[in-house]
Length: 391
Ligand SMILES: [Zn+2]
Ligand SMILES: [Zn+2]
Image 1 (cartoon, rainbow, N blue to C red):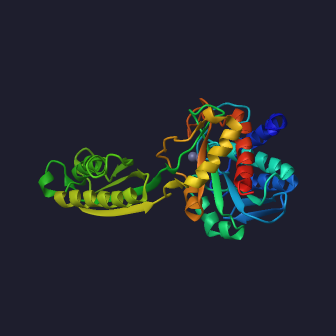
Image 2 (cartoon, helix red, strand yellow):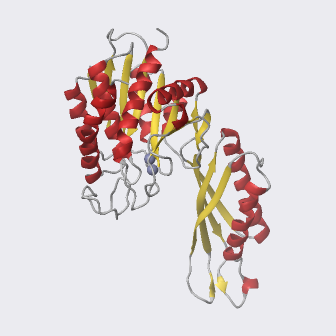
Image 3 (tube, rainbow, N blue to C red):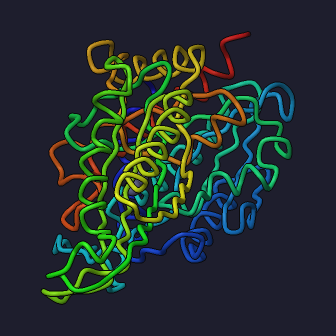
């Protein structure tokens, strides 16, 4: 497409933005520098409107098409926040902030959407409006939900919304997507087992929470293996075990367990919560110990809309060719707060290849700047495809 040579020249500048953001990582909603960096550039590109402070530190830029503020509006979303991880990459643009780093590539997502915003401001080869959305707090803070609750969709009349995440292991230049669930729900059981402590040589005088905890961990494996349809995806991982006492000869009063549950459907999600509770309370009763069961619901399932996925496939094929677009990419059991935006309006979340980089959330991860032109071209083609298809 006509953008190719032109964008090749601009890609190195976009990589400089990416590296600048990488060197200055910020966590959760505390993304003031990054949001400022974004807003300043959106103004300079000539966005018709730039709104800051939506969803606390989110930024939205509006770009009207060739006919001005008429027609539909689509949202393109990037996330801006980093992670509390100490970087070990040793790259020249490594984090300048100890204990914080862009280990999920949100620096790349932000830079690519900025690059696309500049192209869209320059070309305006669409009818309607593009809202470029830069959100805080994807990593556990539900910034996407906070932006939706702050009126993101109504305020800008967004009727379709699109997201993109880099994927290590997927070759640079390739795209992956699927209709339906693409990322999992993430929930967090927390179990407090209350026994009766005492001398370890006289266990019959106690109610041992250790044995109950061990039995509970083993029995919880049956939630997936015996209580879930084998054709459905489900993960129950107990990841934390804490006992009150560390003495060799004391049976403790209390043991706490924690973990995470991942599913790809709201139905399995509800059933799994009920099954985990049943096993926990049943095992506690069998062992004569008390139990407090808390179950915190995190991000919902990220569900792609079929029609929006068709638009995403058409756009990706325009920039990458048919062979580089995987239209039935397997879902992943990680979670993503773009799910909240997709609960508010239909849309599609896709993967863009990051090549053979270290994995996401690894201290040795770095976003692959070679992916930048592919991601920028996809966003531009997507806007043009989504907003021109009804001409
Ligand atoms: Zn992440
Ligand atoms: Zn991420």
